[in-house]
Amino acid sequence: MKILVINCGSSSLKFQLIDSESEAVICKGLCERIGIEGSRIVYTPEGKDKITIETPMPDHNRAIELVIEALTNKENGVVSLDEIGAVGHRIVHGGEKFTKSVVINEEVIKAIEDVSDLAPLHNPANLIGIRACQKAMPGVPMVAVFDTAFHQTMPQEAYLYGLPYSYYEKYGIRRYGFHGTSHSYVSKRAAQILGKDAKDLKIIVCHLGNGASVSAVKGGECIDTSMGLTPLEGLIMGTRTGDIDPSVVEFVMKKENSSVADVTNLLNKKSGVFGLSDELSSDFRDLEDAYVEGHAGAKRAVDAFAYRVLKYIGAYTAAMGGVDAICFTAGVGENSGFVRKLICERLGFIGATLDEEANKVRGKEQEISGADSKVKLMVVPTNEELAIARDTYELTK
Ligand code: AMP
Image (cartoon, rainbow, N blue to C red; front, top):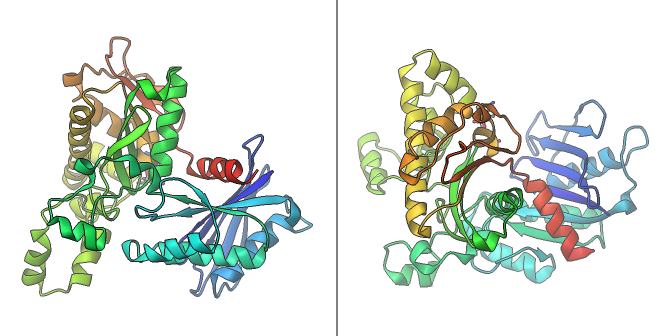
């Protein structure tokens, strides 16, 4: 069966067509600038060159039509429409309602709408994607896969904030965590690579990309993760602050005479390694190059980033009562031996050692710990689309 995986943002739509049997990616692409001038679809059918089509895309319905046209057209299409057996949608926030992936029906759509105030930028866009697919592919089963679901096993002591409990009861203010599909995929894959049952392992997954989070996975279940009510909490990220004292908000508002919206924008878009490096870059490739050349801002930013990851590893080792494996994934985690080294060289306190030669790996599964290491250090590339396709297949086959 062919599974279409859709990741719909407010002005973009990423897609992959995956064969459920071979798990091969038959086509992948992206619709950009939906509803904005200059929109285009860029896609790569398996074994062919990248195709770019500049065309108006006033809304997501048109974007989905173009995706289907790209997948099925006579010249370089890869399937006929009736071969697409199911669609898997990435949904950012499932609140407490969704602890695993579900087949989409009207009740599910209503429940996703109900938690939209927890992810006002993402959930409405995800819902638009669902509606557009329903219109373009009537009768094709669809599955919702939630970024938050894997973290729903967190115990109350980990997910509650130190706020009056009534705020949790009234408004659902608590830590939810994100990147769940990635943390789940990587922790399961790590157990497979180690040839062990996930039930017998304590694993820390460091998902270090433009957005970044760490999770503690004990016995196959998430017991803590660094993102919170929103994806702003936790690690220092590309442009997001991660953990800060909440008093900073009022302080900055007074000093700069700015609004809540201005400060929210500052914390999400202008901070992180971008802000710490004096706006040199949010891209770790640029930062690493500058660090090596002695750029003070790049060093400051990358050191602070690595230190925050180290602190979370320490915290989660304590939370789990030990750790068997630490996995690095996502853009930075998979590709940057430089950042991995900054973190791992300070892990002697848990008996972890780094194999510097193995740590040169980029984007491939690789054990990077030394032979004498008491903790396995691993690079495990994430594959959120494949995880979504697998769940979609399981629920609809
Ligand atoms: P993601 O959000 O997972 O797509 O990751 C994006 C981040 O990965 C960006 O900050 C990139 O700079 C970073 N990245 C990608 N390739 C490399 C690389 N070879 N070395 C360092 N960072 C990289």
